[in-house]
Amino acid sequence: MGRLAYRSFVTALQFLTRIPTPDIGAPTPEEVQHSRSFYPLVGVMIGVLLAGVSLISHVLIAQTLMDAVIVVAADAWWTGGLHLDGLMDSADGLLSYRSRERMLEIMRDSRVGAMGVLAVMFTILLRVAALSSLTPVAMAEAVFLGALYARSLLLLLLRFTGSARTAGRGHEVAQGISAQGGIIATVCSLAVAYWVFGGGGLIACAVAGLCVSYFATVCKRRLGGMTGDTYGASIELTQLITTLVLAARGIAG
Image 1 (cartoon, rainbow, N blue to C red):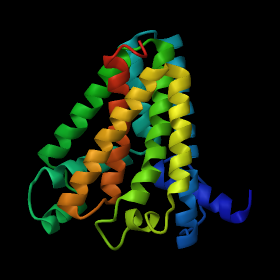
Image 2: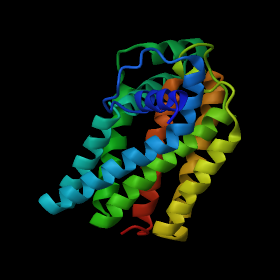
Image 3: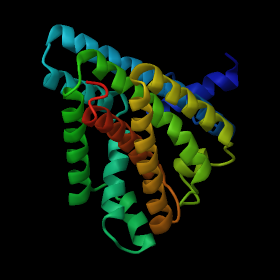
């Protein structure tokens, strides 16, 4: 792996997870932009880790509800709660129904409001409930698919949604991105969904994709584009909705 690829891969890990990485210092703009190519790979890594936790938990505990709680907790641990934090900030800002400038200010505020707490609480509860309704193998497959698909779809959001701000990491990674990488990664995710869950897996991904697209449209209308927080929220929403559809239709059960 060349120096640029190595530093870009580490940058992708630092942006999307809290997995320990070597100290490479501040990444250059080129490395930040090149790191986007590794987002689906990071999704694969998170998915493998969560699937492993799911199966190990089943062997040791064999209680589906507890297994689901442990998997969701492991996801929050390895991602450092970054995407949940983005979901909280997005909920506080968007659901305040203030002016665009005020909503962006609320999302920058480190304090958490009632809407943020409710959004995260219901997201975690719904995800745990959906995962706990699946068989142990299906739970492992579902968390792997959700992790991969969410990071693949993120590339398309970066390409086709504008930035609400003119600075910040979310703005940096959205600059100069092509659609090719996102399309390839998303097609691969859909292939995994079909291979594991058949046509129902494609339905789950389609529903999640439509819901996240609508979320991006709301962000565009109210904020003028996406931010780092809303990109993080989109990851949580993609994982949640994919799992809910799989569970509700009995596809993965």
